[in-house]
Image (cartoon, rainbow, N blue to C red; front, top):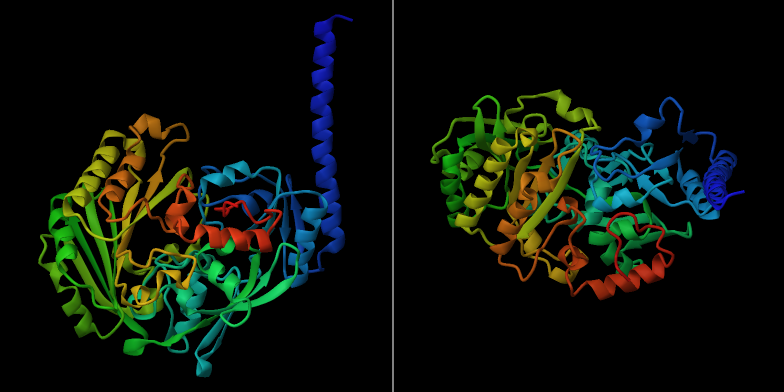
Length: 493
């Protein structure tokens, strides 16, 4: 036998052996799950009719690769899934709404997806002003349930973002000027650790872990449920929802107005700079929400009406209906359908401590250049969250693992690629340049980023601060020494 033939057969044998090894591991995993899950749980494997819909994500970029899905129905199933994954040396990822993005997901392949959609419950004790949610409840579940009993709590702008997931990163959103970050309203969680022990975690019980959960909580286990403080909703549960659209040449006046005006605590601004098919040009749209009486709200947003604009719409509406009404959506219920499979898109973000008007204007022109020079990028946009921060900044930087309480706002870029082949190099690396533009004038020592708006290419200190990293590393070594929960922004140890 010639040496070339021998080497070819050897390579073939190695490939077959590797494939058989994966198949054996998969079969062992499936057998373990089938024999361990409760009668309400289920197992999906590649080829099943619903496997693709169970594993597809909001963004196809850097998507993880799953070969088995465990649909868990209760605490027993969560424990069984972790145990089977460990027994078969299978990496795993807990999922719920599947809207999160992280470059590192692409490294997770041949994995087990533990799907927690059954944990969507919201239970409210109105007299005690507390609410307990399951780990997969999303903002629209929470706001709808609270509206029904005259309560509220800080939530983000997207109705389909997970409540607990946002909390574990800190939770930026409307009402933060009144009540702080979402994590500031967290009272306790029931956490299943990597060894499947369940802990009650709060300021009184395991307080150091409670500190770490609020900012880096994805690293320590799965939150079965979380209990929050909730609040009496002002103005009978209504907010002023004010939408404005401006031509691009009004951006300087807008950023100057933000620089010059102090935000009242009930006010939150969200912006979107992107290409408008109606205007056939890049425009700036603003959604201003004021949690209080309409007259107060109109006074608070009057400065926005003094800037040359294209259109505006101001209405007083129930606070839980803001998502389907914001940005001129006018009650569009499609926004609440929580769709996924939105194609190839990535996210970048930066927190800023001050507004430099010139650099903010420069960034909008960079985006305008990108969407007009490269038409395949026209669905991309820049969003800014500029909510009042009084209740956020009132707490110490060391109150939570999330450190950027001094930030006055956050930029995030939703970069949408109209075709699968376009890379950042093809578009002059403009997405990174926009982030760098704002970061250079943000008034920070280095890039500061909220984890929910991060890409995954940032150093860990940009997410948690250099000062918090040693403390977080100790927690990671104690509660997840084998790094089982390390597939989304792992703490370096």
